[in-house]
Length: 104
Image 1 (cartoon, rainbow, N blue to C red):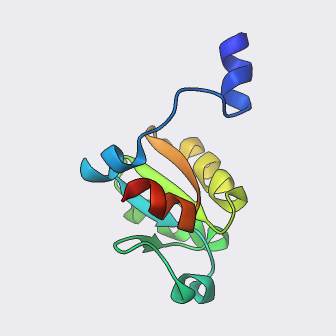
Image 2: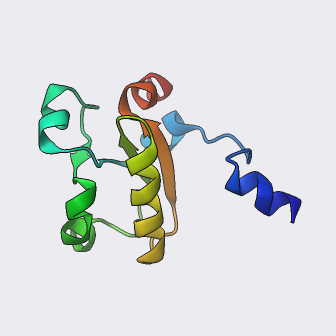
């Protein structure tokens, strides 16, 4: 029960995003195309949250996926959508600019 509470509160083990990227993780940026054009992580894929269902079939289920957005709210929703569609290795990277700092 304590582990479940920790997981819900985001207090679980720390994720090494740099290692995930080095090992082939896909960075899925779920912001709008306009936001994405203003700045994004090189190599990331833009799939706006409101259109994510259209992109699910194009995303490899066997690769780790890191979701990101502006603040972490939409990326958390995207993580839940992907998990509910059978993706197992999905991580909420939060805001794209802070994620960029974590992977460098």
